[in-house]
Length: 360
Ligand SMILES: Cc1ncc(COP(=O)(O)O)c(C=O)c1O
Figure 1 (cartoon, rainbow, N blue to C red):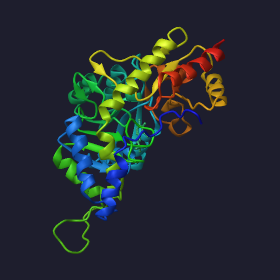
Figure 2 (cartoon, rainbow, N blue to C red):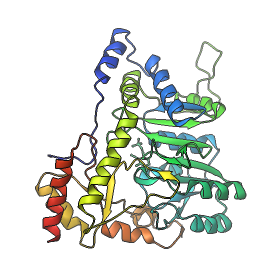
Figure 3 (tube, rainbow, N blue to C red):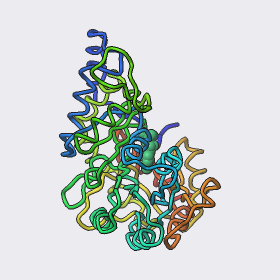
């Protein structure tokens, strides 16, 4: 491939930090870089505490476990999202309730309210999709009114704000992903943020739930092996040092697409009061997006359809849905365009030329 969708972009400091971890023989899921990484994320998003994990999915699973979600419970979840927002609900044996999106491409508060009234879910998992913020204040207000926990799946939206506050910090717990294609990466990883007491319980669950204060292995409950390694955290520390630059570049790439495709495509909106990272530049076309995807592929340029809505997935065919199925049109017309932060304007021009040729 000449251009990937959103490849890792190193700051230049990663190897130096990894070297330091090697010199101190901290090749383990404990070590000073883990604490530095957790502190840097918590400080940046202004969260009380943070826990580094092997994935964002693990963070969502721990959130549900911490809130006591089990087999008899229902959990409302964004319909227009990646499967990892929903699968932790199934890990807990609970039932997902799918909530469609509105014009913002994000969870529709009206559809959520109907679900809260009719289904009485115990928690809501709100995804902030493609680096943009949902109407998180309205959704938080609804959750408070109905006495429901709000978990934010901010896997794609590290660095995004709504009303000056970072996504991931509105709900009781929030999750960021550091997967290879995200704004920043640890080569696979996630961070859970929330109140200190919950994060300390999550830390225990993420390390097999060993009881403290005794020499032997004592267990009152079961846990998981969900920690991040100190080596991966060293990469994360170096990545966090360039977060502002990466956000500015993602937004610049989006502005170039907007300028060059203004007559050929429409774009994901940015809600008033919000400031998104544009983690992936996404666009809607009147032509079949798969035709464009295949033309781009011929030129060794990677693109991807928008998320296939959960209610259209065979896995989810029996789950209750609330909303207007607006996400079906997004899936039918949309593409994620190459958005790597090492791209320059010529790269974006090349992508737009292929799209222009394809649209005729
Ligand atoms: C919306 C969403 N939720 C959850 C995840 C899961 O994150 P991870 O891949 O770190 O497990 C991802 C990304 O992969 C995602 O895009």
